[in-house]
Length: 174
Image (cartoon, rainbow, N blue to C red; front, top):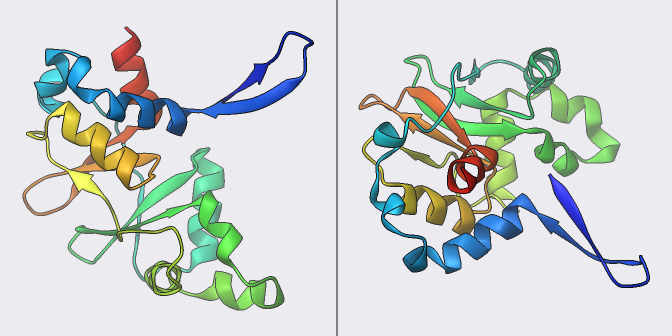
């Protein structure tokens, strides 16, 4: 997910990430071509299954599910299955090292709220789109909000697909 930039002497002088590439694509969105006007449904963009946990599940259990499922993030849903947040391995850095057990014992909903309330790099509880959203909007939302995954939700806000940065980049490279 990262690529080193190496100078003529073989020294690493920088790193390019998937997010950097997506940001560049977003800056050049008007030069990409008509593909950006196609919808998520038309492009068959996104994968299943969408792995979620209920808002009342303890954070430590959610991280165990991520580990067991070999994924780096999952959706947080309410009792009706509607998406209310996202939890990722990246969020672990926000746990106070002096209170690790207390932080991991919180419900996923409360843990997610505390991250947002701390005015950290989380701009929204869960960024999502629908199957009718065009690729240009998906790219812009992912880039501007610095997110690695976007949920595709139905009219009840239930997540049905998940779009990763890798999904978008593979589509554009193909």
